[in-house]
Length: 465
Picture 1 (cartoon, rainbow, N blue to C red):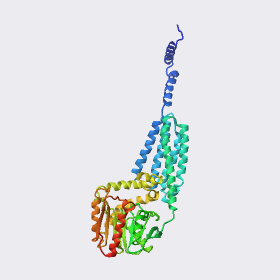
Picture 2: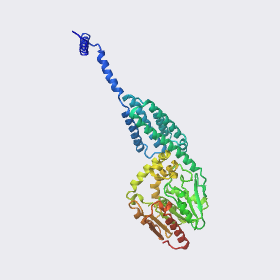
Picture 3: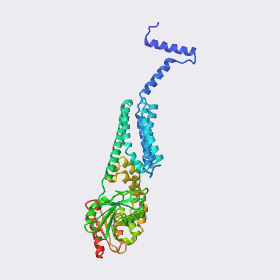
Picture 4: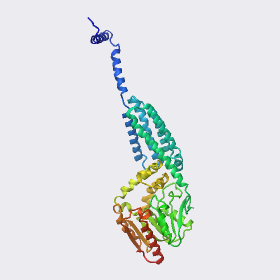
């Protein structure tokens, strides 16, 4: 007898179903199918989008690194920036695809940042805007990116629940910071360009103008050559001291400071030709005492080799050896690292990160300054080879000033060889001085004195001590 209990009812239902399947083979069994669909639906509803988000963002980051170090390595700013944007666009597109396919929270809204970043990246790669256009675009993309980031926050709040939010919010926050950094960098660069020139002048040297600033009076004229990436402003302390005894001129190479840009990198010969034309057209009296700091040392050596009759003496301030790639054991690796960083520098400067990453002051961390430094790094091996063309200054006075603190292997030994360029030379090692302190820091007085001593040696016809 049937009492209607759940167990008995279940057994009867199963038995009846089995009989129906035997009597009518091939017919569906609705009760069992419905039970399976319920389990799968419940499992699907429990699937988190977190794995899709993590995997997609990681894939975008890995693709960006691969492109920058691979196909875009050493390329121009638009190609490097475009490659990174395209990779990030791929990452956002993957979030939309994988979250829709493998989670219960489809994030199709991420197709909007994917299209925004990816299409802009492709446009930069294909069209490769010139620096002037990139500077113009810098007024447009920060506010556009900020608006996109705010819109993304709203979409996250609407469509994404749970831990996934705390993975996406930091990424959106980074976009906002990049927009802020890019806007501040653009405004800051424009403000600095608007600052009136000091006592100097811009002189056309043939297709571009160079800035030169001369103070003091007397002969010989001291010409100050900055190191890689630096400008005439770095010489302010030394120029002020030297101007009390003779005429002194500091100038900006093309693309640096107030001078005009040039379309491509200049080697040592091109720099020497520019300087010779500048001094001639600015009416700077000969002869010259050439002063070179860091990579400015090889540059003045090339000038002296090209125009020996115009040079009365020389001061090398912790100058880079012309044979740096062979005399300094670690330099090839150092150069390669710096070369890689220099190719990334314009893109980092564009978003305000260059100064933070490598510790540069604001005036050396602009996209323009970064481009010129990148180009100088590219031409440096050629410039060093050209500097070897100066094998002797004869008996013209030469003083080598060397920073003794925290130098790379082989530097001091290479400095010891430089006085051999002249039969009237002296070598002064400053044990506590650093590479930069000899020009812009507390040890600039030692460099000033070396310049004054060479001037005195020329005037008195005696070798320096």
